[in-house]
Structure formats: structure tokens, C-alpha cells
Length: 434
Image: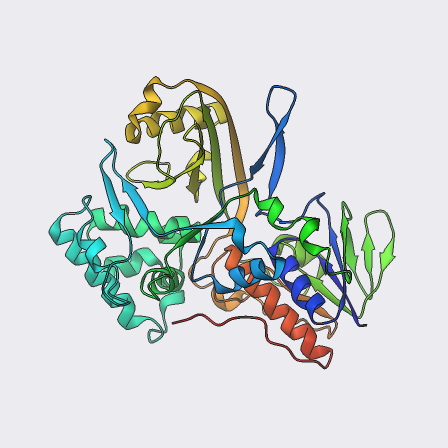
């Protein structure tokens, strides 16, 4: 049985490991943390009563168009632990809600009714929005300069009104790509809209894990794969014909897969040029109230710093998300909580009478890579100059921004390359349905 050492147990490493194991390889996964999942994981915090509570580092969601991520969940046997929602809620300050869901028309016109029903835009703005969506439908796949310009530039070129940009384009795309419109390659903005909103009638449906993220990858789901072994709290310091761990131990394999963040990967594989890569932060805010403050399962909040609300427990435990959250980095945790409560009360009046019992703020300063204009051509592929060393990670050349789907795609692509190098080609990566 040919062997593979996987360095890193994020989604890229895990997806490669499951694909390789199912193809008959012996796989050893080395992870410096005590748990799998990388940046999409969960951990325990004290509850204050002597017990602990498991929280996700930040709310992660997927769309139904994320076919490789769904396939990964299927392979692990956890598909039933993803709850899909077929309706979005856009809320304005003051509490007015616009409901957004697929209609009776066939794709790509299935949202036409919802677009014209958005109460937060006037008729001229709705018409401009539909015109912009039509431009994406026509230009997708045929315009070659989209990676070199920002999404903000493209929206200006299309004469999209300011309120349409702020209340629709920015609200959707910044959350999906974790980058501001003027820092985001238009190619990634196009991809989100084309695949999620102009694809099949079900492509937009939002999947929210019903359990903490860490439970999706727990050891229970690997028991049937005796050819996969995990080594947690084991940091790989170097890779040169063998891996060397921080305690001086070494290990060898037929193939090596480096699936760690780009700044770490460049230390293990110095030929990688990541000098143009930058990070973009995400902030997650958990609030626990003494009473329910909303019965909505989730909502996107307009015109404020907070972008998304997720109802994590009977309306009492609320998680808020701010993507590309550079404006919050310098604030203290108390200041972030104060801002969050103040803004939340503008959308949900019950917050004003509720007592905040506790809070928890997570600032992920290196949450994702910044999907900047011009970066796509600089993202490395899976191969290196060494025939036994391969790369994986959402930052590699997947065609996707930094998402869970992008990470799994990279893992599958790397697994395909290793299978080919071993003389037994396989296909794992599912192409985008466009």
C-alpha cells in the first residue's frame, strides 16, 4: 500500500485524506493543533457554571452549489447534519423585512420575482440591479479581464446606483468572499453571483451546520477508514526527503501533501512565492440574552457594521458575523460587543428589553487570503519541483476564493495529482455547474 503524509488537518488536508484513503493509500495526517478543521472548526469555552460550551470560531455556511464540499460531507457520512434554508431575510434598520427565495420561473430567471419584491430598493434601483445581473450572465466566461479589475470597478462601469451597491452587491459579496468590493477581483464576484444566484433553482440554498463544526470531522466519522491515522499536537518543522517534527522525530512516505496556510507552506516548500498574498479578517460575535430576541433563523442586516445574524438557540443565543472586519481590529472586545448590541437593537426591538448574560468575541485576523485583483495568476497549482511533494489549500489555484468549497476542491485536485503520480489516476473534483 503506497503511503502519503498530509501536513495540516484543515478542510484541504481532510478532503485529500478521505479521497486518498478511499483510493487505497495509507494516510498519516499531522496537525499542530489538538483538533481538526483548521480555520473552520470549533472549540470549548467555559460557561461560567463549571461547565463548558462548544462554539464555532465563526459561523460557516455553504450554498447548494458547493458540490465538492457536499461530496466531502457525504464521504464522511455527515450530510444529514447540514440544515438547508430556502429563504433569505434582508432586514433594514427599523425592522422591515424583505424575503428572498426562488420563484416559479425557470433558472436563471427564478429570482426575478424576489428581486422586484425587495422593499429596500425603489423601482429604478431594482431595474438597475436586474440589469447588472443580466450583464454577469452575458459576460461570465467570455470576458478575460475580470481578474485584473476590482468588483467595485466593474459595478461602477455598469452604472450601478450607490444604494444597490451597498444594499445588495456589497451585502452578498463581502460575506461570500470576505473582502471589500474595491479589494476583490471581479472574477470572484462574478463567480458567486453566477453559481449561487444565476445557476440552478436550488443553487442558492444556504446550508448551516446543525452541530459544531468540529463534530463534522470527529474521529467517529473515520472509524471505517483504518488506513487513515491522525497525529494531533504534532508540528512539522521541515520537509526534506522526510518530515521533521518539532520534537526531532522524523517520518517518511511515498508522497507528501502540504496543506497548511500559505505563510506556513512557504516555510516547508520555499519555492512557493507568496509575497503578493495578504490576509483578510473575520469577526464573530456571540451574544447570550436572558430571553428570545428574534424567531428568525438568520438574517442579513443592512446599512450597519454587522452583516449577518444567526439564531443559535431559541432566539437567546445570537451569533453575528462581520466579514472583512478591518474596522473592528483596533476595538476592544467590550467595544465590539457594545457596537453589536446597539446595532442589533435597531433591527430587533426585543433586544432593548433583554439582558445580555454573556458574550464572546472571536477575531480571526488571518481568516482568509485576500482575493485581490491580479492574484489568480500568482496562486500556485498543486505540483512542485519535487515529484513526491504536492500542495493543497484554499489559497492554491482552485478558481474559487477562500471558502470551504475552495479548500475541498484543492484537496481533491491534490489527491488526483497524487493518484496520477502513483500510476492509478482518479477523479474526485466535481466541475462547477455553469
